[in-house]
Length: 164
Image (cartoon, rainbow, N blue to C red; front, side, top):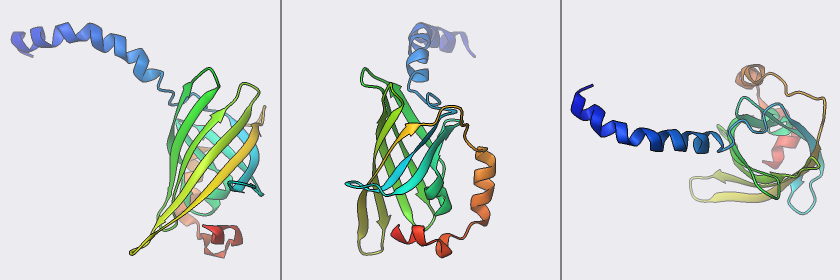
């Protein structure tokens, strides 16, 4: 690196060092290792038993992966109300789930989910929800194994997947 470039970069170093903890505190991985058991379904009355898993900076739902939705990265940040989270699960042919929620200090989780699926002439949308509680002592299944299983999965025979 030339001396001129080094002198130009050097004054930025303290700012970058100050920002590093801010980037790290964006929360990726904040919920890693946690499992939440609850119900997923229509926003006004979730009706299917499900689990949300968080590990390696990713999250997934048991039902959603059974229906071909891939684990997705999540963001999380600590607030006074609890841990606010967000993320997207995508399927090759069933659309996407946009998750926005909160984990409270007592372990309760509430997530609003927007399902959308592009059609060539319109977009289907539905509001869903997941509500549940942290399952202490339970660890998420291996993320690599989940991804491998998804490569062999055909959700067309699963009646729960007909909803999406």
